[in-house]
Amino acid sequence: MSELILRNLTPADEAAFMAGFQDWEGEDLNWYTFEWGPGMTYSAMLERLAQNEQGQNMPEGRVPSSMLYGFVEGKIVGRMSIRHQLNDYLLRRGGHIGYAVAPRFRQRGYARDMFRQTLPICQELGLEKILVTCADHNEPSWRLIEHFGGLLENKYFDEGDQEYNRRYWIDLSRPHTPDTPL
Ligand SMILES: CC(C)(COP(=O)(O)OP(=O)(O)OC[C@H]1O[C@@H](n2cnc3c(N)ncnc32)[C@H](O)[C@@H]1OP(=O)(O)O)[C@@H](O)C(=O)NCCC(=O)NCCS
Image (tube, rainbow, N blue to C red; front, top):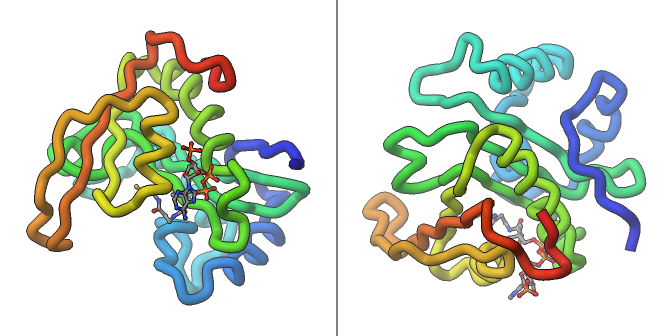
């Protein structure tokens, strides 16, 4: 399997980013991007992403965050959002990280690769433990979280989505399994 590189978008990635939209047709586009919208230029989106990372001009209710994309052989296969801190909403649902892999690239271990590369970044941000949440029925997601040592704090019923969600904490100071070194 080709190596996955998780990193920020750069100006040189415009073609890869635009090509990536076709992999999300029929899916919730938030899995690919929170920031890009029709009519927005790629460079304006990069500027917004940079501001999000620096915590500048943040929209109401948003915390500083990094959006990293997983590249394999020049194609974007998925993304990882890292929230640098929690607010009340994220503490209940959302947590520190959120991730998605495009449907055609799933079940190849790419989410696991992105997760593995994310944990040291969280440590660099000064986080000692991270909250990761997922829908109770989202087996790929909770398997991933448990693979990286997530300890289930609770399940709660989300009135909006009418479904149970799981809230896990991953202690970043704990040694991880041999194939998932921090
Ligand atoms: C969740 C998601 C990111 C997993 O991506 P992926 O690249 O397919 O995951 P991986 O191949 O790295 O596999 C991760 C784990 O899920 C398991 N898995 C993957 N697809 C599965 C499926 N369809 N059913 C059951 N388990 C599955 C794998 O076996 C692996 O478990 P393991 O660590 O116990 O071996 C992907 O399904 C996705 O993008 N879903 C939509 C967005 C989403 O739900 N994001 C999470 C929000 S909380």
